[in-house]
Length: 530
Image (cartoon, rainbow, N blue to C red; front, side, top):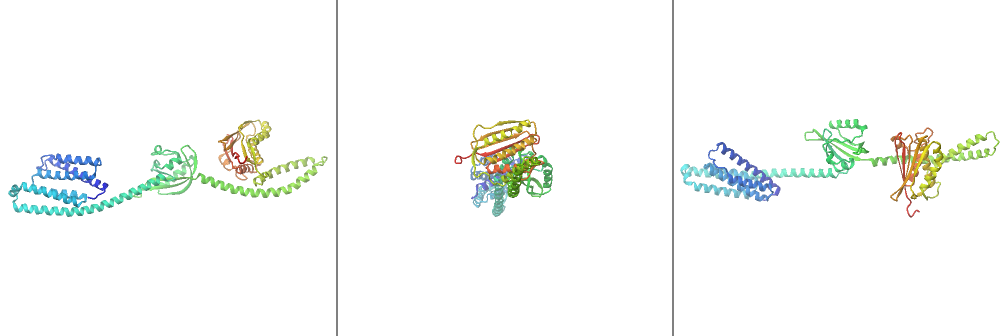
């Protein structure tokens, strides 16, 4: 009897069920008196059946369990034949052969048939005088022929039944294996996918999430199952509700770019794929959401656009600066010559012209800085805090005149960097000028610095001015963007460009009516640069 452990265990389970059902029917027939020949309960069969069931539950060797099951069948049939005292009950072993054929073993069927034949032969031998007197020799021979015919028929039918059952079982095993394999692959895919995946029921309650979802959104799987999660920002509720309604009508959304919200309330750019899940009848039973964080991609796209704008602005700035400076030099020279005549009635106007020429020259210098025409021939090693202190002294009178309090907390440690001092002076000039204009009068400016892990210096400049909106902060470094009536949109663009040239970072946080904080991070000079 060659069977895999799993298939033999399944067959043991089926035959055990048939035996228990038979004992139950025996008990009902005996209790109701429907079968008058049955007087004693098959306790031995019940104990053998209970033992087989216990061994089955304890996962003892399936061949041992099979042996107990076959023994139980035999004992139950012998008990029934003996109790009935009816020669026709000898046909019952044929049913036993049908039951045993479930095991699909020709050897087991043949062995059981031999056992049943021996038992029936012994019964006929022991009861021969009574049988001869009751049935007669001819009828007894006919009964034996009928019994042999039924046994042969049962063997043949059992054989074909076993073949059919084996085919069905093989097919079921294949289907089950395919299902388990498919389910296993899907589970592995779901668990190991890098994109966030979540399944929701029709009430938008979470059914399942993968580890990538937990990492991206910040919710633990155990705390979000069966709940509705606040993943949509307040301003996008209507769009989300509309998409949900369309999904329930069978519509899908592929690679939709939107903004989602994490557990801590922070927002991020997301690319989502929304799909309804159908059952075999084509009914929608759930929805799936696959999310990918594209914040880095969006930032890269923004930086690319800004870089392209900056390249254009640099080219244009260089051209404009040279074209203006050439005639401006001539004008400046003639103006200085005319100023030498102190008695001229136009001396005052010559002075005004000279002042305006100087202002134009400052603007041209900003253009040249933007165009990266370096006035410094090479980089220098210097303490950037000294540049910042000098700028604070430079603006201190202006701050005092406008009743602006200055609070400075610069680090005592030197912050030596490798770069261009004049360009960083321009950075601080631009920032302080903007801070003074934002405050107007009666405010304060806080300046601080600290060394971060011995690798970089962090400079923080905060003001209590009018602040800026989120949209303004996002655009403030773009070429020629300005919110001032007489601004040119170059200062902060130049600032950003200079910080990038020093391999640093600049970060701005601001809120209307609550001021602005600008954080500049610059790498410290390496040992080989000092």
